[in-house]
Each structure stands twice: as structure tokens, then as C-alpha cells.
Length: 235
Image (spheres, helix red, strand yellow):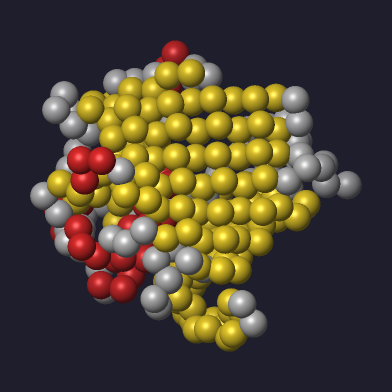
């Protein structure tokens, strides 16, 4: 019999969607292409229904705040990334990751110091995950890459990214897997399906033209944990 997923195990929601890096070629859309939004999702976490929401909001000094929250009776998961647009690139400046699963809570924070060219982590992190890690132009964290996938797919660019997140560097590869029809608010929409598998986690995303974030995301860890998000409303 297959063992049940461990509900106390920290789950990293919405890992980035990406390919091996040709970072210099991954120039980004101009700053005016970014618009604030709130996306409401129907979620399923560890086999239980949940509510999810992604939000992009303007902050002072030309910065942006991008957040994801998923909640159900078992868990309360939250990720927040503050980023800026610099020389045509989206650069993470800080991130906060809070996970509460049953009685276990984890809090981690990251700072991306582009003047020093390094990223560091604090909070509930192992010493070998605290950094510093040297930054390169084009580096992003896991959450921010979700926005980049939609942008780059629309522009016909390779989905190539280097993810600097959780005290590690990963070069993630996403490939297109055709088109499918998905239901959004009772309306059938055509979505491009993209898939990545890094050996520990498989992530599939469905991108719909005109929606700034993936319309659907399914993430499955090799240990059996899973997270699914399907958009219900965009405002």
C-alpha cells in the first residue's frame, strides 16, 4: 500500500517553471507591461479543498509586491516577493515564505542585494542554506518565475531561467506540451500547457492568453504531496 503523504512536511508551493539558462537572451517586457491584479483560485492541497489567491500590487519607489496564499483546514501557506524592474529585468529584492501545516510552522526570509551581488536567507533555515549565493543578471525566485513564464511564452521566448530560492540555485526546464481547453468561470478557454520535472517535483501549468498568471497549476512532489490551483476570477 502506498504510504499517505506526511501532512507535517513543509510543502514548497508553486515552484518556478523554467528551462536551462540562456539568461542574456531572456530580456523582459518593459515596465508598463506589468499591471496590478488579483486572481482567485480554487485549490486542492494534500487532497483537501482550499482557497488560493495571487495578488500583484504596486509599492513605493517603482517596486512591486507579488503574493500567493493558500488556505484550508490543514494548512496556511503564504509567499510574498517584492521586486523591481531594472534594465529590462525583473529583480527580486526580498521574499517571505510562511507555512503552517497542522501545529508545525516554518518562516523563512530572503534578501537579494544586487549592489553586493548576493542573496541570503534567514529564519527557519539550515546553516548551509543561509548563503550567500552570488547573483547573476536574470536570477529570480520561484514565485516570480510564474509571472515570467506567462510573459515569455506570449513573446515567443525560450522559457530559460536560473532560480535562486531557498538557499539553492536551480536551472529549471519547462517545455510546451500542446494546447488544451480549460474552464474558467464557466467559459471554455484555450490554454498552452507547459511541463517541468526536476527529479523531485513535477509542475504543470496552463497559460491562457490575456491572463497574467497561469490559469491552472498542478504540482506533484515525488513523496506524494500535491498542490493544484485553478483560476476562478481575475480582477
